[in-house]
Image (cartoon, rainbow, N blue to C red):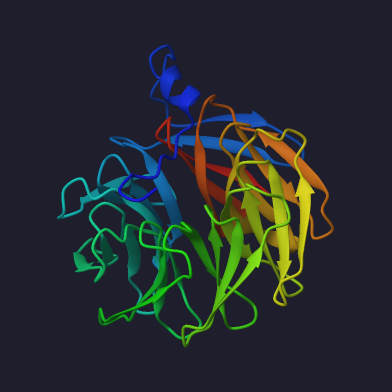
Length: 328
């Protein structure tokens, strides 16, 4: 993993690029499902949408991994692209900061970026060379916390741009996603070491092994009842972990569906994307799973986030769409 960019796309999806006829450029198309309904929107000029978050300005903010831009998308799907100053930085994920700005990671650029609602970008170089920051979230201490998957570290940056880094016991653990937990700590996945990690705001790290070997824990989110939920990408499972470290796993109908992004939705349910299954999944607090087919195939759905009016929004990395799904 050291020195190798983390591939998001399965091999057969990459190969299919040579034979697939892309969908036409349309404003939207839908497929009815019960109870979920999915609507897709083309990102004009889009190029590999990945991370997505609802900003404090009421717009959606999306990172384009291949396009090297941060996009502002209005509720009426008017898109504005803001180029990142560092070329080919491979932006990955984005979150809302405590200062009313949006903060994002630049994997190969090895920087943390900040963008104002007006589109002004400032970049902060990560202290460790080739740390490759991946996911980022707002911590309970008012700082931004992020993973450095190539260096095996958890990073913290203040709104003023000051860094602190906390190394894991294994430099090749591949920490990937990170989320604030209900206990005042930060929780993260370790894809390579098959663990869920917990780091306090003072930097104390504790790790919990995932019961299924080689599960490749990927996305993570906070849920209700003092739990966190995570995706197990390699084995097609959804995991639930208590703040004390007890893990319960729930198998998807198809083990090869590759669950990826994950978030909490209305009613305490957890929603997630399936890269190979080409579906959006929902799991109740008790573990009941329902899946909804995405109209475009393959879509390579990645990140998913809550939006207004009880809807969830997600990115389709391959089709250059963003899409929404109703939750009730």
